[in-house]
Structures are given as C-alpha cells and as structure tokens.
Image (cartoon, rainbow, N blue to C red; front, side, top):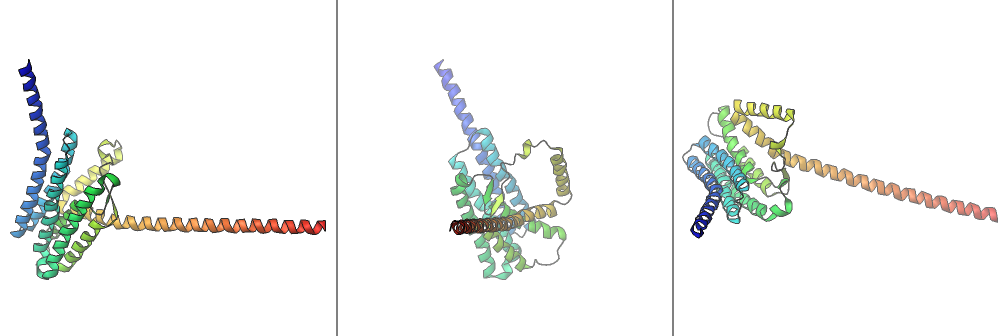
Length: 283
C-alpha cells in the first residue's frame, strides 16, 4: 500500500514537471524563431527573417496561455519569457532593419538599431515591474512584440509591392526612432487580454471577424502591416484625444467656478442693496 502511494506520488510529480516544461518549451521555440530570424537577416533572406519574427509572436502568445491553462505559471517562466522576448522582438528586428535598410546610413544606422534594442529592454523591464500596478487592461508604452512586428511586416509589405532596387533608408530610420520612443513612452495602448473576445456571442462580431480573416488571407503581407500600423497610430491619437478631452473638462470646470463666483457676488451685492434700501426706509 505504501509502495503504491509512493508510485502515485511519483507519477503526480512527474506530471507536474512535464506541465512546467511545456510552456517553457514553447518559449524556447519562440527564442529559436528569433535566433533563426537573426541568421536569416545576416544571410540576406529578409522576408524569411520577417516571417520568423511573426512565428515568434504566435509562440509568445501561446506560452502564456498554456501556462495559465495548466496552472504552471512560475517566476522562472516570467523571467525566461522576458529574455526570450528581448532576443526575438528586440535583437532580431533591430538586426533585420539594419541589414535590410539601415546599413548604408553608417553609424546612424547601427545606433538606431541599438536604440531599438535598448528601448525594448527598458520596455520589458518596466512591464515586469509595473504589471501588478497597471493591470492588464492596457499597456504603458508600445509593446515590444508590436514594435518588432511593425518592422517585420514593413519588410513583407515592401516585398509584396515588388519595390525595385534597394530600400530607401531614411523612412526606415525614422520608423525605428519612432518605434523606440513609443516603447518607452507613457502612451496607453489597448490590451486584448481582458476583452473576452472568445466569449462574445454577437452575430456582428462573428461577421466582422470572418471578413477580417478573409482580408488577411487574401493579402496577408499587406493586411498584417496595415493592422499593426493602425494599432501603433491609435496610441498617440488616443492620447491626443484624451488630452484634449481633459483640457476641455478643465476649462468647463474653471468656467463653472467663475460662473458660481459671479453668481455669489451678484447675490451678495443684491443682499447689500436690499439692506441699504431697508435702512433708508426706516430712517
């Protein structure tokens, strides 16, 4: 009986170990995709490198879901995932951008690539520190996977258009600098973790999802770029609208305060006049 219990306990421990290994294996696959992207970019296979970054994006989203579904979340997994993200979404897209378009610029090119990596590392470090304070409804700063995939889909987009000759480097330089700034900014970006898309029962959502799937399937390279570019632009646009809304609310509050003060002054003046008239009548 005791031997059977020991065997059962051993099986449970082995099962737990297997469950903990599974999400980390997926993270390792994401890391491998990022490394393969670096090798492909060095070899001049830029489209292949871009697809490898997109594959890493899928695996990066999958490892967390598997960890939560199996109850195998751990501090080790969080740290390992961050290191994997730095390679797959920091170093890989930076080198892709460098070998694809930034190399002719010289020093500015490799400095722009390094800036992207450094800002990506800062973005990941800040996320790990603030995740409990900020929550999961939105991100503070552009997520590093989104920034990486903008670079990757830019390569796909240009390839799909059949752009002849070498890529014009200056638009890419500007794009890398802008993405780097957005990653370390305080602009809020929407997180899709708590939207509950899988629980939506609306027929309209089903039709919209189906149409989006068809559009992506027809022109995946173009649609991926447009979707990600829209997501990036919506952050600053939403921040500008919120700032304008807050400024208007502040102006309305000041106007209401001035109106109240004017009304109080009128009331006080009216009371004073009434007292003076009453005093004159008595006299």
